[in-house]
Structures are given as structure tokens and as C-alpha cells.
Length: 200
Ligand SMILES: Nc1nc2c(ncn2[C@@H]2O[C@H](COP(=O)(O)OP(=O)(O)OP(=O)(O)O)[C@@H](O)[C@H]2O)c(=O)[nH]1
Ligand SMILES: [Mg+2]
Image (spheres, rainbow, N blue to C red):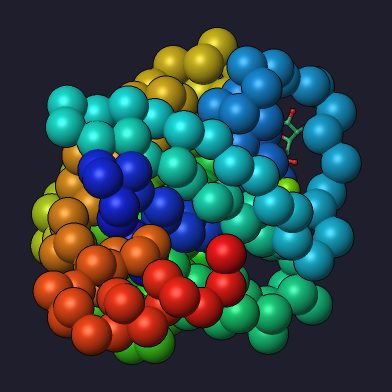
């Protein structure tokens, strides 16, 4: 969930998608500004954090990069439950990865937090010659399902910061906490006298 305090917002974000779609590469680009050609397949999940400044707030993303391998599927709810945002990643050169992305959308729609900000990332946009999934098809699908969609490239960095920034802008701003942490001074003279004589 997104939680706030003085316009500092902590937001749990989960990346979901087919094996090899580029989830870890997007996170590595966003968090460290790096890209590796032979990124190892994720085992279980990996955690990262990164902060983004938006107009009126600082959003600290707590990022869970999940593993796309099917044998880890049952772990996914642990990461998307309570998440404020999700990025569902597919590879524009791989139709099957787009079909897998749609399955994730369905799963989040039925099991996830209904207020979750969900983005669809068509990754590997640098590989235009090998494209199998058109942006028109995805645009239509995204509009029908209330997602926002961007084509990204972890390799060239195209749209990578942008997709996280767009999510940060769309996060609902939670109400300030009813009882913010810290001491609450109350106007009750008798107690104040009692504590003053207590412990100094
Ligand atoms: N050309 C190109 N290759 C990419 C891009 N993003 C990732 N790759 C490559 O695709 C391969 C898979 O990327 P990963 O980031 O490991 O994919 P993943 O979704 O984390 O995969 P799992 O952890 O197995 O679920 C790696 O060899 C990356 O270098 C991109 O934007 N462009
Ligand atoms: Mg990975």
C-alpha cells in the first residue's frame, strides 16, 4: 500500500511477467542505471528500492522483482498482495509473453488490490525488426482494461524512468495518519505535574 507522512510516500511495487521479458533489466536500469546483456534468470524474487520526486511528494518505491519461471508462480501473491502498484512486463518480440501478461492482468483483477496502479510495459522496444506485438493492439487492450501502457527498453533506457514516474504520479494520496508518530501534548495540567515530579 502507499503510505504517507509529510508527503513522503512509501509504495510497494511488484514486477510480474514472463521469463526473460526483462523485469530484472528494467529494475536494474531504474535503480542503478545499468544494463547487462546476460542477465541471470531471477530465483524467487529480489528486492530493491528507489526514490522518485513528483510535483508534491517524494515516492519511495519498495520494488519486488519476481521470477517469471512458472515454478515460482505460487509465490506471486505474496508480492502483489498489498502492493500499491504493479508493472506487468512483456517482450514486444515474443507474442507468448504478451499472452502471459494478459493472464497476469486477469489474476490481478481478480485477486489483487482493486486500487492498484497497474502499468503494462512492452519491453525490448529497441528490437524493432523482431517486433511481434504491435503497439496498436496493446493500446486497445490497455484502454479496455484500465491500464496504462508504455513501450520500454532496458537496454537503451527509453521510457524506463518515465514508467516509474507515471506510476508515482498516479498513486492515490492517502490521508495523513490520524495519530502521527511522536508525542502528543495534551492540555491536562494534573497529569503534567505528576510526570514532571516523576523521573528527572
Ligand atoms: N535488446 C534488449 N534486451 C533486453 C532488454 N531487457 C532485457 N533484455 C535481455 O533479455 C534477457 C532477459 O532479461 P531479464 O531482465 O533477466 O528478464 P526477466 O523478466 O527478469 O526474467 P526472469 O527473471 O527469468 O523472469 C537478458 O539477457 C537481458 O539482457 C531490452 O530492453 N532490450
Ligand atoms: Mg528476473
